[in-house]
Length: 310
Image (cartoon, rainbow, N blue to C red; front, side):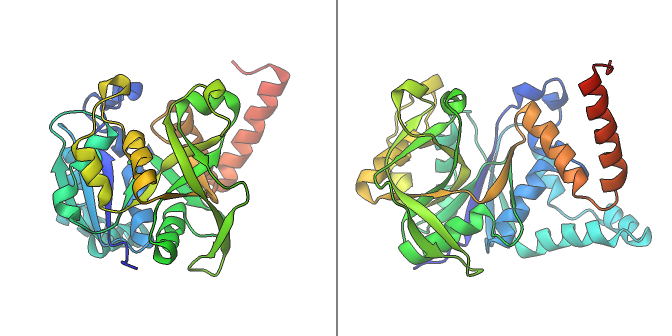
């Protein structure tokens, strides 16, 4: 099977949920503790073996490109100040992946954003990671992107990550219906055994009453180049946009798609609550911040319980 060497990261959204902050700052550059959202996404891709990353950017997203470029003055200052850990992270990302930026000239939807990467991807299979979603592997497990990459290496089929959601959240996601009630299994790169299903149908943000499935599509995919042929002729549907979910639904009948339940923690950092949750939990995992923040959170929870918070 071909190795997944390339990834598309759509980052052209306007970030209207974070206005006025995103009037001049791309939402992907909003920070989670001390690094922008996009940093964690690229880092996940690189650690999954991705070598070439195609950023699909919109107008006013130059800050993303600049972040992954060399900053001689800043890096020299970090070195002199002894802040070698963050310097090393920046250097690793810059050196391990070739960052390519493409402008999405019109905001025509996620499907169109993926199609914009066609000339760079060519006929190779590739990953897609949404630029405002962060996934964090749990202890002794691999990341969701690594799951999909490992799965493709064994099956050669397009795949997507899913998580189980409650009825009230179904209409917020693309939903995957599956054909087999009993999962299949593969062995991942860390010898972990994880499950997958065969997709039978994909629905774009249906009502809970319109499907029995509760498998919500997350922002992680591995796709064959066949998807570009479908997107080439894809018509706009919901919100008058070219939906990736609609194209993937067609791909099921042509090549098949596998569905992998995620073993990772997921943060929708493009949503205010998800963004705040990510900041709190990332900070609690930070050795420098953990103790002080934990004590604060405990006191805050106590005041909320007593009704004394104001």
